[in-house]
Length: 110
Length: 117
Image (cartoon, rainbow over the protein chains, first blue to last red):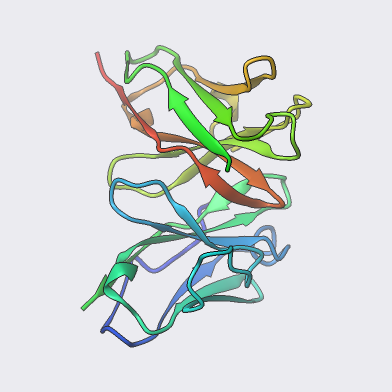
């Protein structure tokens, strides 16, 4: 299975909105609504930010939102803050009963 | 609150077998969750290794399947990873994690494993 494709880096100024894409295939992203997004700060374990394409776990800011169209899922961060600077990974359940992660995106707050 | 803690050697010799254990607390390993291993090579992205259910059912990353064994010890509330024939490319931080309803919701803190002679 091939990793889902994400842009290597995305940047924005404080207060702006940014969107990170996650492109897969009809065997993963396009097959189910089981796309999740994770935030990872340096030296830390990943943190679940979005699950089932659009849902936020309790405690995650409403500034984070997710969507999907066909084989591409997206994470949008609104009102960008300095604390949002981190690496972000998508993941999807696949038709082979496995999980596949995205290549990862480094978010920089200018 | 579910907590997971990895343990095992931090250094493994090339061609040897990497062995890690994850201790689960705050929930029974016989719950609905699946128990996963994920790794992250230095400076690189996350890679899903595989998962096990308390029933013994497993799923694996096809690229690693021939070298991976995941097992569960219900009496100790633990699950384990064995990765055989390791090379320098297997050097990584290894995380244990739980999935429920198709999302990885809890992670261990990670343990660094280096493959070197």
